[in-house]
Amino acid sequence: MKSMTGYGSASGRVGHTALTVEIRSVNQRFLDLKVNGPREYGAWEADIRGLISAVVSRGRVEVYIGRNAGARAGDVELRKDVAAAYLTAWRGLKKEFGLPGEIDLPMFLAASGVFQTKDRTAPVKAEKEEVKKLVGKALVAHGRERAREGRNLQRDMRARTRALSRMTAQLKKKAVGQAEQFQARVERRVQSLLDGAVDEARLAQEAAILAERADVTEEIVRLESHVEALSGLLRTEGPLGKKVDFLLQEVNREINTIASKSSDLTMTSLTLEGKSEVEKLREQAQNVE
Image (tube, rainbow, N blue to C red; front, side, top):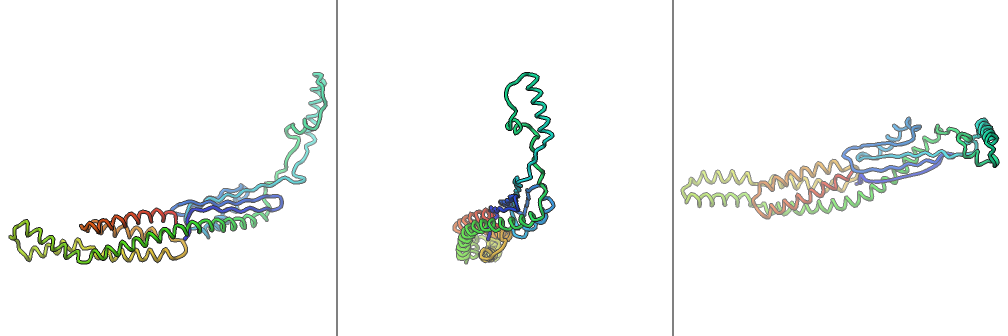
């Protein structure tokens, strides 16, 4: 089991160009993948998305790719024509206004346009392979983080599923003979109200119908099956979030039905406990891939 929340990064170099990749993910019902990188890498986005979607199946995933092409010998050039123009202007200014001082290097460094950095934004072919390697490394780190959080979620969800299993067993035990007891109560109540003036056969028939409607045996059998399936699912590997969410919907439906049909206080209390556990499980499931 893996959480949808995670972070991973990797960095490398191609020549003088420094490259970084960061992957962040949070909860999302489906896969929502965004790749943010240099404009020059736009043609590679489909390849990068493919690498991510092959590993991550659910969540909001943001990929950041940084590129810093550092300066090196030959990247900066002196524009002599601009420097000469500045020099002529400074000399004219000095002569015209009789200004003191000498023209020195700091004045050239402060002048705009005297030095120019060559455009080295076009990525070399080797950068694509390096970026793909860094995405892979960042995915590994990202996966470790998701697996660590996933183990914590799995432990908690297994414990809550065991609590549901115990609750189901108690409901099953308590439900034994409930229909017959309900029928007997109805008959006694009606006879008491009518002071014995009642058709016994008709009374037994109507009480049996009411007792059948109040019987929760089928719901408990289905609940037991769903909880058992959930327990087994939480022991498997791979993306589980959607399957867990579906089973929890079924568990919740059966618990609600049992709660609405049962008039026994103990069973009502058990269903309330079960609904509480299901709600906590559903919250956890929102974080599972």
